[in-house]
Structures are given as C-alpha cells and as structure tokens.
Length: 321
Image 1 (cartoon, one colour):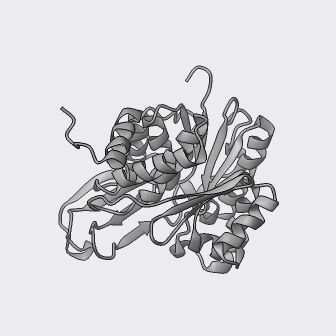
Image 2: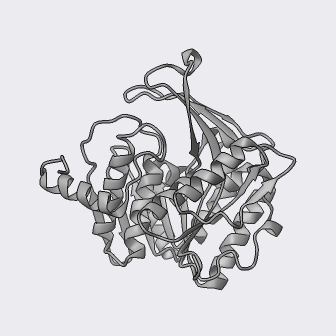
C-alpha cells in the first residue's frame, strides 16, 4: 500500500466465538473462532474484491487482539495504524447459528479497548490519499470519546477530499432510540453515501424511510441506499431511483449480509459502475455471505463475485469446472 489506501474504515473488531450450526447458544459445546465487526467486515470484503483498505481501531494486548490483527492482515487489510491497548481487553462476541430461527448474540464489550478510542489517536495522515471513509453507527455508540473520534474522521475526510459512507448498523443493545438518534443521526446527515435499513432510517429521522431519503438528498447526501424488510434494496439519488430484488439462495446464516452488501456496493461505485450495477453486485455479495457460517467466510474475490453474479442472472451451471 505504498500509495496509501483507497478506502479507510474505523470501528470495533471483536473476537467471534461461533457455536456449532443449529445448536442453541446455551447448549453449545463446540465453538469456532473467527473475527467480527461491522467496519472490519467491510474492510475485509473490499480488500478481497481488490481494493486497498486501511482499518483503524483498537484491540487489547491479548490473544484475541493478536487474532483480530492477524486475520485482517491475512485479508490484505492495512492495520499499521491500529492501536494495541495494554490495559483493556479486546471485545468478545458469542453467537449461535440458525438458518431459520432467531439467533442469540451476546456481546462482551464493556470497557473494551475499542470503546476507549479517542480523537487524539486518529493521526492527521490517517486518510491521506483515500477516496472514501466508511464508518457505522456502532463505533460512536460505544463511548463519548469514540463518538468524538468518529466526528474527527469525518472532518479529516472532508480535508482529504474523500467521500463519507455511513451505515447506521443499529444495535439495540447499545442504546435506545433517542440515544441512537442523538449520536448517530448527525453522522447520517454528514454522509455522502448512506447505506441503511428502512427501519434504521425511520429510527434516526422519525419519518418514513423514503421521506428520510429525500430529506437527506436535499441536505447534500449524494446517494441513499435503502435496504428493505423483504431483502430488496433501493438506491435514490438526485438523478433517479433504482430497485434490486433479492436473490433466492440457500440460507446458512443471515449474520453479516449487511456488511457484505456494503462491501459489494462500495466496490462497484469506487470502480465507477452505475447504481443499478452496484445494487446487483451488492446483492450478489450479500447472497454469498449468507450461504456461509461466519460473518466473513462467504466474502468473495472479484472473480468469484463476477462468476456468482453471472450464475444468478442467467441461471447457468453453478459448478466451476
């Protein structure tokens, strides 16, 4: 990454302990270790799709932190500016995995290294040369200092001429509706590109999703992607409106679909592709993610994405011989 990253993400990366498929969390005995985190998932996804990506964040000086950084490096993500905290642990996430019933997710992040992120730890060159900053609402909800760091990143993005991409990624365990609106709402309105569920737009703006999208565009946002409850998606810009239907694929684990969708959409737009094509690639990447167990197992390479998209569109033979 001699010329710097194309995309910078910043957020919480956690060690994931994933229970054996189909077993409720309270009955699970065998767990598989992995890495999870909205922004780190998107970073890994974009890197696999061929983009130069830097992840900013904090981990503990512990085996979990070592595993997080090692996994991100293995995906080609630049973690050279990540902070290793000698006094706070890496966050831990436990969950089970069911394709057709509710998933139990338990977070152990109180006092974690990620929650201690401060604006002072965001270097002035963190976004140097970057074309895009991608953040979510999770990080600012971790602590007041992490919220300040998120605002600092947006300021640096403006100075660097980078676009700001924002995914609310609302997690109710982090706070109530009012707190989310107060903390994540301003970042939503600062973004050039918004990727949000229709329920998230309604929560953060107190109005229907389509009205919220129009208001955001009037306020300076360039494009708003609305992820619908039926798994379809709509992108709205000043120039038009496009719709993408969901792909029918075998469901193994639904967690991580939104981050895969974001990686697919951002990759297409960074490559100068149209909004309809970006929606198609985003839906394709999301469909690959939900066919694998962990948050990141299904994230494809660019070649695998193109092959899968061709198969989804044409219904061709899915066996690559």
